[in-house]
Amino acid sequence: MSDKKNQKGFSFIELSVAITIFLLIVSIVSAYLIQGFKIGVFNTEQQEAVESARRAMEIMTKNIRGANNSERGDYSLSAIEADNFIYYTDTDDDDTMERVEYFIEGLELKQTITEPGELNDYTGPSTTTILTDYVNNVENPLFEYYDSDYNETSLINEIRLIKIKLEINVTPERAPDNYDLESDINLRNLKDNL
Image (cartoon, rainbow, N blue to C red; front, side):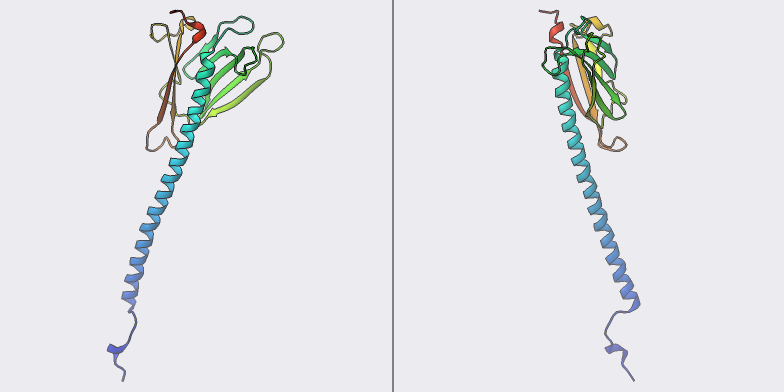
């Protein structure tokens, strides 16, 4: 007869409990690692999107500040809408005014630059580039227009200051909220308060 008290090993119940505890620990650690990875990826993407938006804001600020009459004498500003702005400026320092348009398409802020062409009618070559993406200006306008007394205006010939507000969010469907970038641009060639 064999003695059961001297047998070594695990019973089925002990083995089942050990495996269950091990799997529970593995699932908790896995969930923690996956969440940490997602947060790291989000932070990297959000930081890259914000840096891209800052560069876009610098380009827009520099170019808008230098708004001037077109090559055929048209007024400096051509179209003023909440999410679309068209004006004339010398973007490439060739002493020729190009027609510049900023607009939102989907989640991208785009810029179209059109050369004046032979007849200065702005039918020359155009180039459209993406300035930045992840733009989330759903509720707020991209552009606001102000007169010399800092009152909001919709009269194109009274505009002396343009406010740009970019709202950037890589994941707008979940937290955190938008990262906002703002800039106020005085139109130096249209000053009337000297």
